[in-house]
Image (tube, rainbow over all chains, first blue to last red):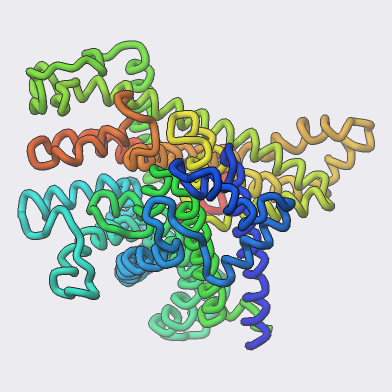
Length: 314
Length: 272
């Protein structure tokens, strides 16, 4: 078991390294002197020159990369050009806001979509199946930013139940904070139901027609045992992979939902940084989100043997 | 089978309507999509303005039609870039093998380690937030997916007898690749390109919605939605119609993509 865990972690390390390489060189592709870019337009020539030697820009590019990587490992992602705050602090603070919304939305969507997908697969081509598949296809096709605007229009403006603009941290004021995150959670929840339901249904269908299911039925196991022991665990494994992918994709795509509901999350931080050409923040956000994505997939990989015995643990 | 053909028909209908609207929109619109008319400011849907007018009195229907052609062109260009680059890299990687393959696979994996739209956002920071920036950023962001699929197909074909036959009969490597290997990648590429068209349309609207896409006053469905947000209370239709257009086209592409995959990949028939 330990060897399995270690080998999977070992596989994630090169990926994280490659991600760091891409993020580092991506920002280097921006035309202009990196030191001037990092300091912004208002910097004096002296401070630019000072940062140049600090960053080792006079040294070759590999040395520069090594210096940057060392800083990153020490938790130093640089300083924001616009707010002068440490990027690492900014990213973590904003991540807490986004992560709460994403986690709750994905958890609720999984709880609703996986059973619904399995039921649809068991009643393949029934009216219920067709309805569920159609609803999923529809939800999948509605962009989150429009779904968000429609939800805002209904619950915020027409019914007036929820606040339209602003944000209160759930940690500071749980009851009021909750009001501000309900609509974004509902938006992401509805969208992901579409994605996950299709996947759960497809993998259940695939498992249902395998020989060992026929065998289990033929040897006289009650249908309940067949389903709970043989169908559901095996059908859940691919869905679990997708849940991991969905979690990561949401972190990348949450900027639009945060824009609709004026929530100060990580996505909004990245977009504002792109607007403001705040390269240290752009770099920090890209690196952080990509590493989280790799970590989520690693965790999914580690959970895999719990559901799919075919994955060898050694 | 009945539901399958229904999928293809409904999908084809929606996508067809989009293509027709985009084609007409690029040559003719009921009003000048850029013409300001303060008298019609925030006018609701009526006989004069079928889908209403926006905060500058511009005709929403005209802007949606022009936006359809803009989005269509951006998506086509993006899919073309990703398909050409991805096919070139994937086939070279799979066919040559060795160190070329190892390096290309490592780069592909690194790029695929970025979730969804994130890589495009990073690339946009370099290319700049405009029409060309979007095409380049999304095109490059989708290239790894194409490269991976093409490489897989090439690898599975490389050892087959008809490829050996082509080599033995004295065909050049290039000829073998173009004549015998790449045609076999067409089926998976068609399915992927269809989905990619949908992803691009969605991503382009999302980026324009964020203000990182095609800058106003040129209309796209995304920036029309973004402009509508402050007027949600007075003029809800400004937000309803562009979003409805995006959703209908995406639904059409998804249905069409499912139908295509069922046709080209019979193993998956009726699964999704």
